Length: 429
Image 1 (cartoon, rainbow, N blue to C red):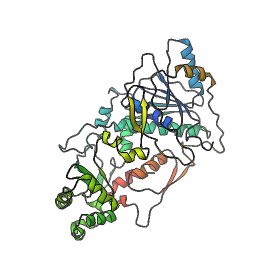
Image 2: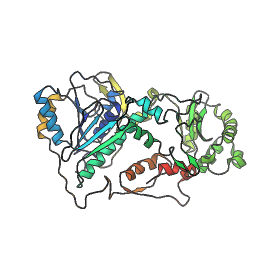
Image 3: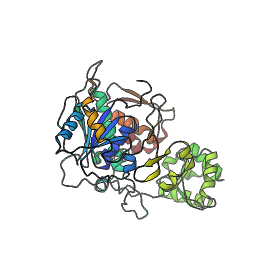
Image 4: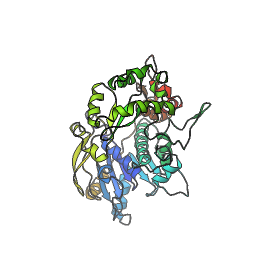
């Protein structure tokens, strides 16, 4: 119905203890799905960031040794659209109309433990985090788990969408290994002129001369002058228009990855940028419409007054932590707004309500108006008007699930085509 949240009629049962599946449940709940998180007796919240990833869920403790709770679980499965689980939970048998999504580290039988860091190491993610030592480094942010959760949430939504158009119930399998490769689609490309590598030790300040980190008088600043227009603006603001005539800086900044060019640019620009404080440069560069941003801690980002004013960060009273500032809504919808972020609830807080409501759960029937879709998003048409990486990544995933995606470019083409194999990887499908 118009005005309802995007996933308001979706019911999901989550039975997981790891971050990846918990994050998938968080994403679905944040978009309006009713997510019941089933936990065993004595459950403890050990998932990193539980105060955020458990938001919006209805936590219920069901004891498998208790007949009434076994019946409650059966009623939930019988009426849910999807069951979301990980390796800590038993497999759910095939049930007519039910989407069963299971998240794992390796995607199949493996003697290796289901460990985030191990997946990041084996897939090359640690090695591609550029470091001063030119050795693999530990990632502070568990990007593989987050990407796994994104793929699981997308898989659940797509499979339910397909079922309601006439596709049968199905199992959805998502792995950390698959997520690591999806996250680096533009890197793992092998062809006649390039060979993707799991070990690409790069420059920690950035691979390109003017898409890079620069030290200021009091910290670090990132500048994203990635096109000729931004390059011209940057050199103008810095008083070095003369550099635009240098034969080494002709063409797109996307080609300025040669070490000699980077060294040249940094020798010329580093002394200039080191003269002023970060805040002053943000004002000067921002006024000239040059992409830039300060390098800050997560605590500083949460305290940013503009982030708070825009609702990117919102105040929430956490049952364990007290007053907190947390990320706000995932996205803004003009007609079907997502619910405002609620606080996370303690384990088992909704057990009684879930036990009472479970028998009333009814899975919506399907009403196909055409042939059964051969892929989850078959028949969906998408126009991709984006460029570089972040924009095309979403339609790339939609194409992976069967949507027909048309990429529309200007007469000059997507500037990211200069990245060659990177463009191919991020625009497949």
